Length: 389
Ligand SMILES: NC(=O)c1ccc[n+]([C@@H]2O[C@H](COP(=O)([O-])OP(=O)(O)OC[C@H]3O[C@@H](n4cnc5c(N)ncnc54)[C@H](O)[C@@H]3O)[C@@H](O)[C@H]2O)c1
Image (tube, rainbow, N blue to C red; front, side, top):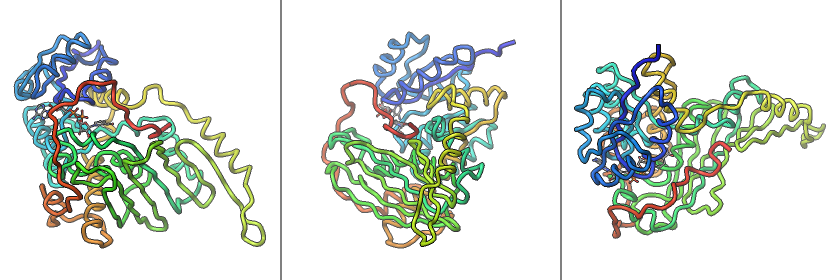
């Protein structure tokens, strides 16, 4: 017998809320969106009308938390509001899926994880790019040892945003957005890296702002992360016009990347390379053989979240996974601010662990002088060109 559909509330009715609602609507037998909440209730009502939902528009999300027929919430708020809203929702007995970045500090991540444990509820953090076929296949190939131990990684998290992107009130401030391109864009690739390779031992980074004068935070960054026997270089930018994004791993037996490409060399007697075509063919064959995902992106993660609430699947992306990514982001900022290499883990006594610690410490590249409450609705936002093509 099918269980009663789960009741869902969407908290925050901005750009990404749309994507969450579309994802829930793919599982009509599992859930119903029963409330959409926003400080601007007309934005909530617009979404309800657009999707013909039988749902309440709430100006105050606490109204949704009081409803017994709501089992789970999607937190689609600006980053600085994630932790408090998640903790309140978990304490109200709701399961939570929270947009990236999980929170502005490790301290808040730990509060969220604790609230989930204490209330026996699920906490998931959005990392929808794990559910992209090429990312899944490359992870599987790494696990199978297809290229041997990874020696070097190159991750290009390159995006483009206009100067006016930062006019939205919460963007471009350390306090409300919690950072720039590292926290809100490269977060996707940092998550993929730690999912595929695990956590590095140390981080060294520099950040700057080269093209966004209405933002306190960085719009370009280079980080190097050290693993035993290997190193990964991450570049992040918001000034890259073609938004080329790639993840490249070089192993002892070959190289693989997303977007998919395989390469392999063997040494001539003088050490110079010649192509190892047998190995390239084997990598291409195995890549082709691995199954494609039936569902990708937010719908796939939300499907897992719903099925995990119903006890049918294990939750795949939990609070600890979200926390790992925030720890790497905190380490990048700490290294950039101090000019030092940062060894992981970050201790709970570190200012970069504490709530407000990053905002209090980081330089302001510019002061934010322009602020608009809402942008005019345009076409749906883009979620990164090649994160998993
Ligand atoms: N996973 C992805 O690819 C992806 C893409 C875009 C955005 N995001 C994330 O989603 C979150 C929201 O981003 P967005 O682009 O939708 O922002 P947005 O500004 O378009 O939407 C946020 C909404 O929250 C509302 N809000 C703010 N504080 C509130 C409160 N206390 N109570 C109720 N409503 C409140 C605002 O009025 C706004 O409508 C951010 O954390 C962002 O990083 C994720």
